Length: 182
Image 1 (cartoon, rainbow, N blue to C red):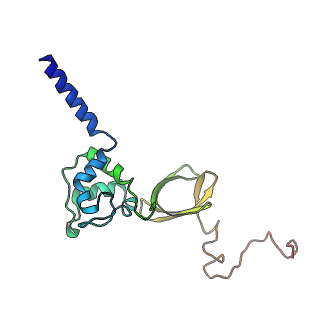
Image 2: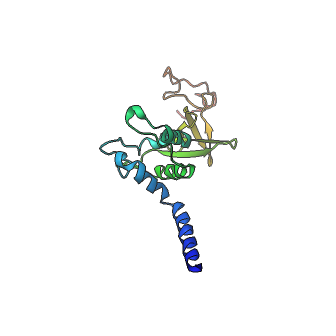
Image 3: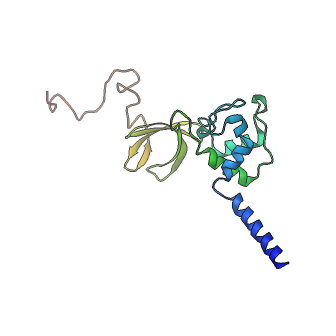
């Protein structure tokens, strides 16, 4: 009898550990999503590619999408997904990449005032970054040390050629004909 109880306990603890493996989100994806969206999220016979769409959605958007589906587009709802399965599926979806490249990425930026902004990186250079925030607005940032500050028309040129009129005029008075080299 003790051997049977021990075996049952070992089996149950193993199944609990299995349910929380790093690949549990992949398993949910394979069971619920891959038949339509392809095994890599890049589209299948019945559903579109989602690898490029997922980064633009927040975790809350994705959880709602799983619960409600998109019936008009042919995606069924999955109301029986547990909270744990939903979290693991979202974690797995965040690792999907389009076949053609790395695709867009999500980032959380630390601002100069200590605040945080999260969203989808639309474009980035060594000095600035454009972000589609989780608030669904586009934010423009300049690098300031290891943090970012919001771009404002008072501190930066708002467009090429200085102003939207393209006049290239600058009200700066530090450079004059008297101190310029030429």
